[in-house]
Image (cartoon, rainbow, N blue to C red; front, side, top):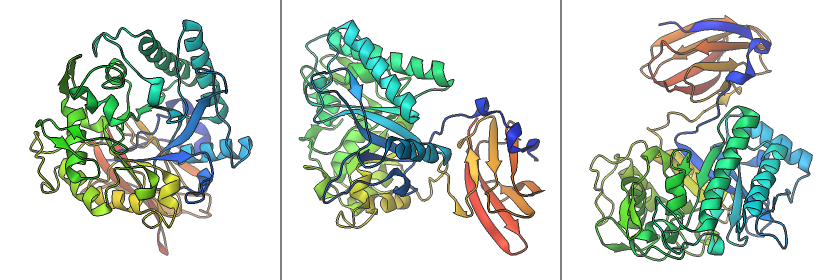
Length: 442
């Protein structure tokens, strides 16, 4: 089966056909916009390439406001930072702006405040070129006094839902694509709904439910948490394999609350969120072996690591990935070794590595990745002569073999290909010059 060559030169490629990156399995890392002696400020262009979703933390209200949001990079000029965001996105990464954090309450106490919130967030997204938004509202930012999951009554919750929809609609109108949306609530706001439904307990559930079709990744913080019920009615403690497995399955399968039933989310919308090391959080750190065993069990690729048994016996092979607080901590050598979290992600998903772009040797630009209709393969600038481009499917069968020269680009139609992983190799007379992977998802 041969791919159809639609164009050879990059300038013929229509940029309106570019789809947004959808990393899967995802390695999501918060990047914090301040300098910590133990986890220093890290320029975006120095982030380990295994991170494919970068969540910039945080956009916060201006002093004296709870709704007018601002962001300024602290360790780079605005021009440098914006360039680095563009470089990451060009490499197929998602770069999101995260709202809130533990120290920045956000309240939308009127329609005017809601509208200012939307306008200020759209300005930030546009100014820096972000293609995603993360909702990390904590403390007093989210609270409920009544209603149900599907019919909230609190005006601040309703305005927040409307505001997120408004930001996403504004982004789509301006860019012609969907804004990547993630949420990172603490456990009390989600699984805590099994214990109570009021105040902060279960308070995120109406927001998640209202936006469930828009949420790309829900990454409940499995740290800085009290004990929580599993679906088996047993209470589990943070920092254990049982906590990781039970709390992850709860948000996939759903659960009952006094505010109604939370219907759960698809496994490919759920990431396991953990601290990079002990120092990165107040509690909930699990060592790499514990995380490996728990997530492999969740994927259906490992044995039960503790007392909690999955209700879905086959596991969840579509589980979206891992999230950590934070990339800065993971990069710090004193934090369990430099990039131990990223390395563990690589081990966990070694045989699930489908939609992650991987490059070796010369960098090959593959976009979008995954691709559904068209995919562009752009040769690296180091190519000076003719090279062979060889594309094989997951079982090693050749689907394309062609020769291209410097500054060439192939745009390929994929409708005749089966969904799955394909390997792209560049070869010349001296051997392999570089490779990348692309996932075709119809």
